[in-house]
Length: 317
Image 1 (tube, one colour):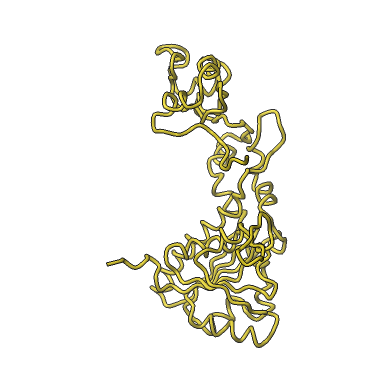
Image 2 (image 1 turned 60 degrees about the vertical axis):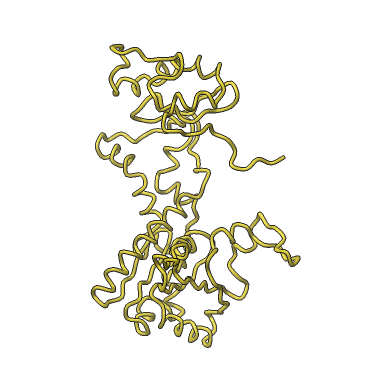
């Protein structure tokens, strides 16, 4: 007998586009929640983003949209239309959760804000995902992943040591906010069910990224010195970084020995604090072994737990 999914029976409405708003609803859908996505007449803007493939009927289909909106049903409503707003509130009356990622005040201007929805569903968990939260000097600003990566300080510690700040290769601000939003929703659901009162989850992309950078902020507050960009090097452990091998780059070396390269016991490298203080000298101890070996042979000796050499996620041609 098939067991029901953990969130089976949970009814979720999504009024969100692109990534940060749809992602928490996706996480809930993956665990069995019934997610109904409300799209404007022109559809979620992500539908038209590349890469696009043929859907089979001659119409292009956005892969990014498909990835973030699986396991959902879509309904087209023009929330600027009074009739469609009334239909939306009928859906709200039967929902457990509402997720939206509009700028603060946009839903209120439509008569669909937290207080409005509470009138038809007094136990609703209403989650707002925004760049900078519902209040504060930046609240009304729009936000994109790269802007939040910059404002949070995360770009200042990303990139090569002698290079400029760099954006992470994946949209971490969007997806970090989505994870925290989903977590906040589950916590608020417990509280709403216990108290019988609605809850508003205010999820700020900036706050989520600052939480993700807790170690770096701790270093700043504890020492007074801002952390620096280190490339793939670790600030408190060595050898721990990407290294070039004869065939390609290997994963970070996280062992104190690799093949014939070994840090001698009793040497000035024997204490954990010594290696990070001498990163270049430490890596030179390993460089000859790495550059004369293939990545596949380095990985088991560097990382006994089994990480694999770095490679492209998708090979073209």
